[in-house]
Length: 340
Ligand code: AHM
Ligand code: MG
Image 1 (tube, rainbow, N blue to C red):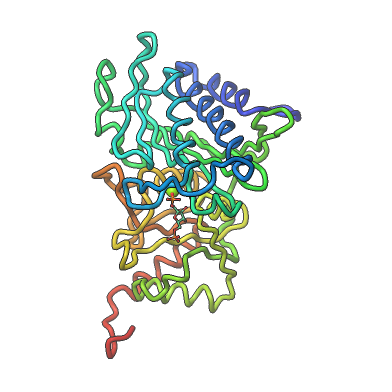
Image 2 (spheres, rainbow, N blue to C red):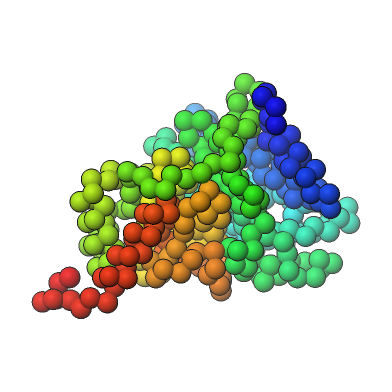
């Protein structure tokens, strides 16, 4: 595209024209997500001014405490997608079950959306970055009826599009439809997401690792050995407590993000559908890798339930390979005197 400001809407439409058989539905859906992101952004920005801060006093399906803004973001996303007619159903980290959306004016949609409306919500009341993560699948059930669970329990390799919005020092929307990754920064003066980073490529390695080091003693021996290695190599430790923010930094500066299994979360903490798959799709599209701590490719995991958790190691390809080598080397080393 020529050297001038390109808005998210223009970019999406331009891309659609490259597909002669496209119906415009996916285009519409991506634009709806852009609109929802602007609404959530407005609320995140004024969160300190309004009495919207603090926990709403409920727990979500997976037992984490829910902040008010989570509920707001969830509502707004559902509302935007419900009214547009481009989406047949939504599964959200904040809702126990998936939400079928009836056809609008007889228009049947062939897409469903998975979303983590506000990732890293414990950061909200201290003014630290949070994000929205989304994934889009083509539904597999009969489009003339309501969506089914099977429409959401698809592997990450079946994602049609995925991305995230980071509400940080500036607000940025990053997405892929499987043909590279582009980023759009919100220009608040015109209220538009403008193309700011084209065809992002992750550095092959970086100088940072990202893990909740506080859980070090709860990790398996191979993860502890790998973390020791990161420290030996003088990698800097960066951990924001919002996966979107950590991944965003890694996309541009290189590095690795880890959330291994702990005693509290034997399967890992992060959700396959709402967090790991969409971010793995984005990271792989930039040339990175995403695997579990058992060395399976995240995008090939078979989802069995909506709120399934997984372990994850994601980021620069050479660093994920290095972590893999540590797992292979230390995973089956027997404990010596009860220690390892
Ligand atoms: P959330 O979606 O409930 O906010 O939780 C997800 C977040 C990730 O963004 C972050 O990396 C991780 O949970 C932090 O967990 P912990 O505090 O256990 O390190
Ligand atoms: Mg989350």
